[in-house]
Length: 367
Ligand code: G6P
Image (cartoon, rainbow, N blue to C red; front, side, top):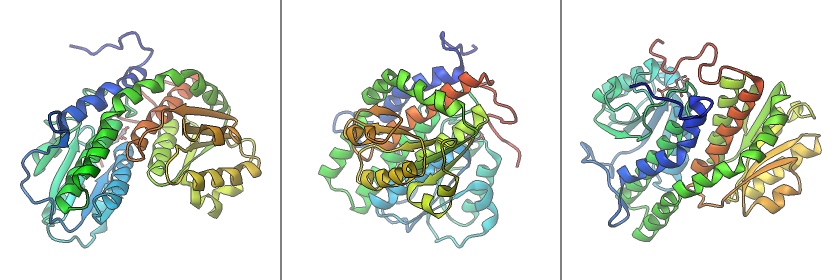
């Protein structure tokens, strides 16, 4: 039957509230509750010996892949190439035989991602797809599918499917790191604990609704917005900017915070709010000094942080949203939620058609 909005104003709002549930269901699928270890289905290839990974996807799924790259490189020590599918399919890159091809898609039907999958397969790359629709074309053409347990996503702009993709990629990183010998049992225990903590921490985010709406009032008045983040918070900034563009029609650009001085710093003034994702991770100090540079040029700072970063952020930010502090590994998953909520609140203030933004489609099956 038809899926209702359960009293929410839009499907997007309903789906945002499903983040805790979806992260929990996806973890249940991937972690054995008895020994708290990541368990993957039987592999048709050996994860321990893949020489490198190539990640490709479109839209939000691509940004999930970017977070996956940071994890796979730093935790599993696996070299990773990444590109949007519409570029990868025509780039004709040299591909190491037996590489791991990681395809990410909510629908499993996106034309560019499917074409990239076929190109990789022709080059003897093992295809592992992270898909929400498990009976899709990409599923049929993959050697292995890891399912995101997000349920149907109706809103054109992706929300819960994105955090579910991150959850699968986090678990996959743990499994690959174990296979490659870069993560010992204690390390695995620590990372699994960080993930298992997420559903309840994610539920805490909704208590920040008022703070997010205060930020939204600033953003809704702007014509241009600059999003900043470093490390795994850079893809979170990219996802935030994409979401804002998609549903509120406000121009937004995301930059790696350290790269701001090479260009966008010239745009900064009172009219261009800066939305930063800055939880207390090892890159917190670096991010904060970038934000100070922006503030010194008149920038208005709207900052997502956590309980450990709050005191220092409050000294410079005009508005801030304080989330629970979680392990660095889990931080991009948690910090995605308020960034998507911000875009939603801005779109509601602007009165746009949130679930069906102009010119966009849920599943883009043409090139
Ligand atoms: C469309 C949607 C995006 C989505 C992208 C990729 O552009 O509007 O929200 O991220 O397609 O879709 P997929 O189904 O491959 O994840």
